[in-house]
Figure 1 (cartoon, protein in one colour):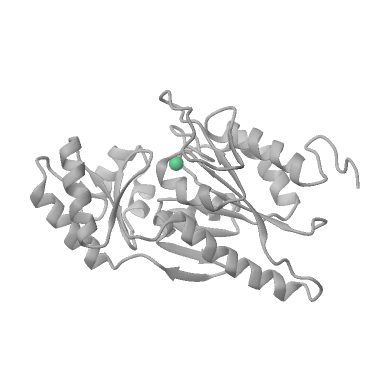
Figure 2 (cartoon, rainbow, N blue to C red; figure 1 turned 180 degrees about the horizontal axis):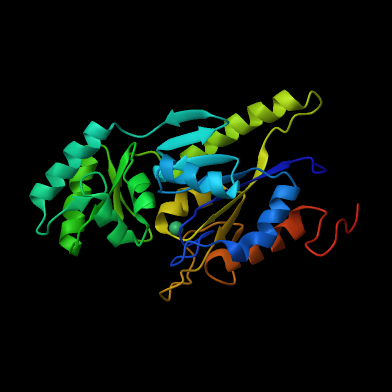
Length: 279
Ligand SMILES: [Mg+2]
């Protein structure tokens, strides 16, 4: 790369790179092609399972690394690391929540793939992969505010958290997307320094993109944070205080495309309309 500092991009999927309703990413194709052309590592950071992310990547070949289950499991260059809690801990905490709240509690680890499919709109094969969870469990419930408060307190007793994503409350470990991002950066730095004997990059300039509260630790960790506005709903206020936060001009992949192109115009000596502008 021509830059003294390498760039790495970390992106949430649902509602960020993938359209909230169709899960499509075509509108982001120009920026994705540019990222690939610049050999910028692109890391998927999602509440999805590793099985889901690997399947998406087999079809799309978009990602150089995968962070699943909100930071609980990391995959890079064939190496997998589980930072999250054991499935036994997750199950014990969820059972206690089920007994304590006022509404029925299902979850991805306990219901059939057919129910996961109907809750998410995923095809059945995808729903099966969504149920293959290492260390987190999205709850299927119609919770009141009090139920959420109760469940959060129980999760804390187990050193777990209840994180609100785009669609679900997910029971998961204290690992976050931000910590997993730091871990991937360590691995990336190692693999880069192995390739280049002269001046290996000391650190990466990092860009993170997300649309939900569970993306905040990742956005906070990044040098440049891009908030993707929600497709349904009025929220346009910033998710966090960040010196380099920008809000994309559109929801989903169209916003991803515009924001990444603008930032790469700024950070690299390339332009989306020409090969090299200067330097
Ligand atoms: Mg999202």
